[in-house]
Image 1: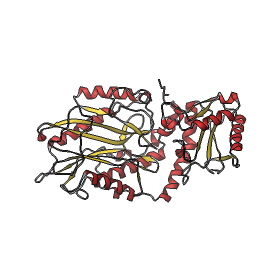
Image 2: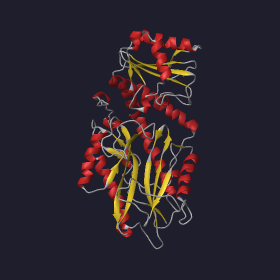
Image 3: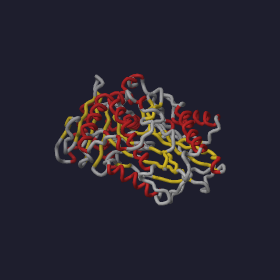
Length: 453
């Protein structure tokens, strides 16, 4: 079984480093438009992203290398077959590996790291050039000589059965590496999966300052989409709204990492208690319950957000009381669930404790929460899956660490009196930070329905 390490005391970032204004983002903060938030141009983003990378390499990676016990970490990839972790390690405006690109991280006796690039095209800062020749064979020989000269006891490479993000060393390159190294050094190669996951899941203070802004943009676009600015009841379709969301993000210069999804529930549209998901596509009509699922990546930080809307019927002034109670039940699910987050607990343990608390209150819910970061479905502890409310072997055994971000994702089903007792499913997903003690929503959370009038 996969074994994750508990965060050592030396790696707990001071709480003062956490985004100081996170508490200002009220748990029920209402957003009306993404237009309230600045979006940097691609050129402006380069300075921000490179500053964050430099800080991560200077302060975070040495600590994680020590935690993993690795003396050297190799990231080796080729153009068109980049290692998933590669893009989190190289400065912008680099986009891809050139020919065969090698990064070497060597831990020195004082705890600092030597960062080297062994490439035909030198990367420049924050890397020193370890070799910049021309022939591929000479490049591999230079790498081998560099390794032998530094004589690391444990050499991490990116191979993993469990984590896709830690399995970026292709079979061809792995074979070439073992052939070029002296046998005694080839025996020192070992999976670097713990280091890769910890590197990708951990947020530093500079990122914690950015993340609420990124999450607010995502929530703001949803607020625009679930309004009369976009929806004409009886004419607009769920597909129209989904395309509005996608095109709005693209107009802002932001990349959705999946196609936005919009669906509707309504009286008479079956929503069975045991169905995994409720909702259909089609024309949006008065009295409909709307749901969307959207995700963007900006300044390398990804979001994953789901919220709910309601289309007023003629003469209605507010959302029916039964639906308001359903959303409140969804918020209660969030509170009970996030109340079980503990440093050192596995994702499976958090899920089991939360299920006990939810069942004690009679809430009919499902939890399927995942980490956020440089990927929308980022590495870290899996806490339930929509089709498995029991333990998730491997990734569910990973332990919670401070300064990690999550998409608090799940749903509740509630019988609505105004719909003759029909079940309504409230599906929620909000980005949040776990600082080691508390869960704080990055840009607030939905506590009131988006209303289309």
